[in-house]
Length: 68
Image (cartoon, rainbow, N blue to C red):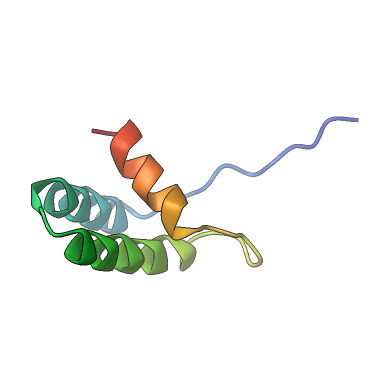
């Protein structure tokens, strides 16, 4: 029996904030500041994900790179 997941519904304003943070992330040269931006974005995304979802900082970094 396959596992089905409900698609995530992220409000448009949060999606805009995500896109803005992604631009900041790619424009930043300092690894520390990039980590701070990714951590802030992680917190933003976790507010709209199902309870108990695990999202690591490395996952956010990878997401930013994939969406470049």
